[in-house]
Amino acid sequence: MGLYRDTGVVLRSHLLGEADKIVTVLCRETGLVRAVAKGVRRTRSKFGARLEPMSHVDLQLHTGRSLDIVTQAETVHPFAQYVGADYARYTAGTAVLETALRLLPVEREPSPALYSLLVGGLNALTVTRREPGLVLDAFALRALAVAGYGPGFDACTRCGAPGPHSAVALDAGGVVCPVCRAQGSAHLPAETVRLLAELLSGDWDAAEASEDWARRRASEVVTALLQWHLESGVRSLRLVERP
Image (cartoon, rainbow, N blue to C red):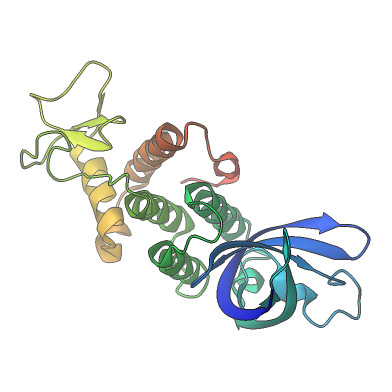
């Protein structure tokens, strides 16, 4: 039992009793943490607004038997405040948080790569104001890679034959060559495959020059890959606006 300090991103919160909340936070050093924030729903609370989903915070916590206790919270980046009046960015940010939560390992297992990716994604969504759908799809592809699913859109994901290739197989996690292509593989236009590769690599200039139809097709592939690997869909994706 004792105090510890960490920075993290609030992924979700639940009401508890009349004045408390349970917050789920991805922390940089500790990993996934569930903690009680006592009294944060009272008007006199010092840090209630700092523990909204999407908030990037510096936390002090007390180790508990089942749930830790938040004893202090300071804002690092107020990502949540940037999206309150912007439906497209809010829904994309919500889907980013859900995707991160679904891909996380067990509680208290650090995932510094996913933590850094999450902070970078929220920054791109709120501060640098990248196109919300592209930020979401880029985050999802790179989060899948961090989780060990390694999507690929250049070489064949089965045999490694250099591309470009136009067929995508969900079980392989990306494009496949004509030799490895099996029944059920989807055919994609070259522009869509190229956009997926740009999102995975973080080539924003090229990705933002893409056509709306290519973005829609790329989003369909990202959604299908998430559903395949997670074995169920990310529910908040249904609310995201697409071009």
